[in-house]
Image 1: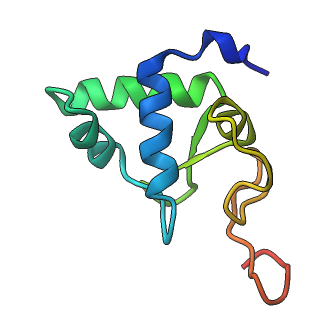
Image 2: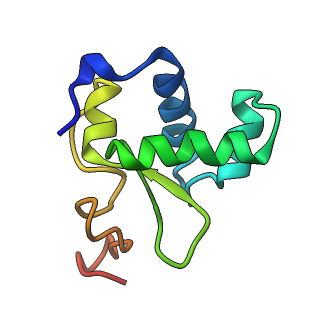
Length: 102
């Protein structure tokens, strides 16, 4: 797990944006870049890549959306389940009624 002290202010800002956009889906990398005011898509991809490599965010399989992992929630000072998602290795949406992967 990443040391929370190692998370930069800029990373926390990105995580807050992802958190706020996680319903009904996470933001795309380009949306993250626009919200963060980065000058190019390449810079946005680098920013998202670092969050993903450090275990703070995850790109949904078959989607362009980003979601925050449990470590990312911890970095934000939030507790509990990550917006109805499983662990970072299994990020399929859960059916809220059935409690089963959809």
